Each structure stands twice: as structure tokens, then as C-alpha cells.
Length: 298
Image (cartoon, rainbow, N blue to C red):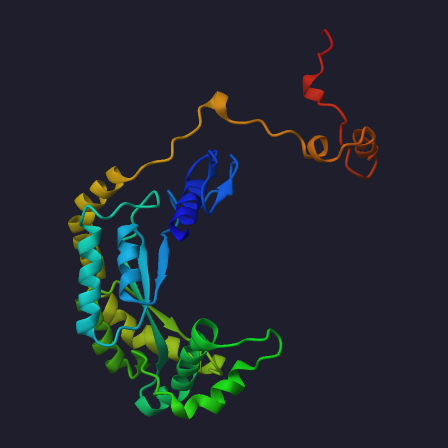
């Protein structure tokens, strides 16, 4: 179901007009979906992954895998290795018009020169983030507008393990951890910042410290690493795109004509005249197509 709808969404963004589709889980007539995205052929496609098998699904469909923090770099290396093995194999058949070969990791974020203060500022929020995921995705009974998730978190927090956020700590600790995940094959890290009752001031302070002391170290040599990766994957991505079953564009004479809304929906002879009676400061809506009228002889 996900793959079918996502593949058609990619077709809508890349094709003009979109030829239309009728499937088991998704149907839409031929339409020209606009505006077209600035990124060509379309923005990168990602799949949120909560387990190892979903990461495999992402690789088989040629999309990025957005996962939550791995337990340790060794496990990250194993999952990333399996992901890229599938990307390079005949099992990778892209659902999009491009292959987004990337693994991203989401983790908590709070940076301070004092580790204890970094944990104090960001640990509770990331712990709540995990609790809220469990509440809405695993075990919760939620009454919209009534259930107070924060109160439930406070009642059960003592029974939860402490939050382990790889982005929570001192600048030196973040550099060490992020470098380990980088070496393990993780391409991107997404920081969970606005969780629980994390304050805006603390978030801004963390971002400023990260930009000043962590980011320059992590960005060093990134262009070269990206170039090596693209060169290594290029033949495999080309082969994967050749395996894809492309949706064929419509021939010009096969593009269906869509009648005017008023003509197709409102069955009233008076409607065109009523619309046309908007003059003066209003909108002048013709009741007949002026472009179809014969032009007077000059």
C-alpha cells in the first residue's frame, strides 16, 4: 500500500500531465499536478524505519531509511551495511524517479560544555519523546482533547530507563559519537530538539554551540566523502533505474479533456447567465467562450 501510493506521488511530481492510475490502494484520474517541485525530478523520498526489516524495505524500493538512534556504532554499521548491500543488488527496484541512497538517524539533542547541564536541559524532553511514541504507537488509549500525555509521562517516568541521546552531551562527546556513526555508514543525523518542555533559549544555545564547535569538525572533508560515495554507487543506481517499470506518458491526443466545473456539476440553465452578470467592480465571467466566436472581418 505504501509503495503503491508513494510511487504514484513521485509520478505526479515528475510528469506533466500525470497519466492517472487505478490500483488496489490508490486511484486518481489524469491531472497535471502543480506546482512542480524545484528539485528535479522530485524531492528525495524517505521511509520512516522502526526496525531492521523496514530498513530493508527502504533499500529494496530505492528510498532513504530514516531510523531512530542505533544502540551502538557496531549495530549501526551492520544495519547500514545491509542497507547498501541491497541498494547494490538486483533487489533494488526504485519506486521514485531517482534513488535516494541514504541512512538518517534521529536522536536527542542538547549541547553544553558541562555534560550534566546538557543532560538536565535535554534528557527529560528526549525521554518524553520516547514515552509519547509508545503512547501513540504501541500501547496508549488516547482521548483527543482529554488525555494529558505529559501527566501520564510524569506518573510513569520513574519506571523508564534514562534517555540515551547521542546528541546530548559536550561538544567533544558529540564529535566522538557522530564520527563513530559516520564511520559506521550513517549519512545524516536528525536532532530531536523541541520535545517535552525543552525551552527555546536552551535549544538556541545548543544550536549555537553546535554550529561553533561541532559542525566545523564534522563538515571537514564532507565534500570528498560525498564524491567518493556517489562515484561508488553510480553504476548500481543506474542499473536499479533500468530495472524500474516506468509509467508511460500520455500521447497528446490521449490526454482527456475536463469539462468546466459549472457545466459538469451544476445542472442549471441559469448558471452561465448568473455568472456572467458580474460586471462593474466585480469579475466579468463570460457565459460563452469568446475565443471560439468568429472574428469580425477587418
